[in-house]
Length: 121
Image (cartoon, rainbow, N blue to C red; front, side):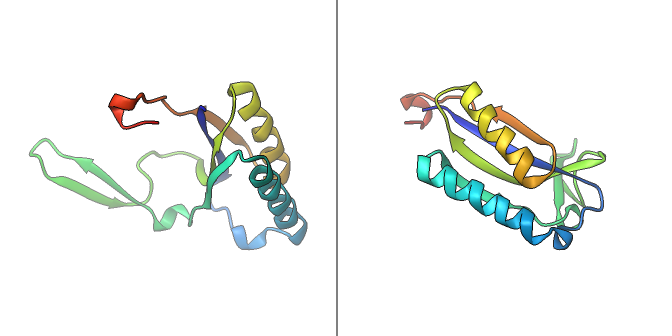
């Protein structure tokens, strides 16, 4: 079955500790629904971007490690789900529920499907 990333986007400076109890309950309900239907493979919240490290290969072959995210943006991925869904439309429906529960923009993106010769199922 195809797999999808459902990513939550938070603005710069987002403070997850300010999330209210109602929001946390809504996310818990969504997680339970995803688990009950067998759609959820994995979910995780990410620490703030200030804790991130970006790595880039340099022309001399060395790897440069810098603090923070690689891209300069006003939003960053704050958490995500890895889901199995029959198609993109079904994954988008989960994304709609995530927008409501998380009160934040969501991106739904399919993974490349890998065949048996590529290490996939």
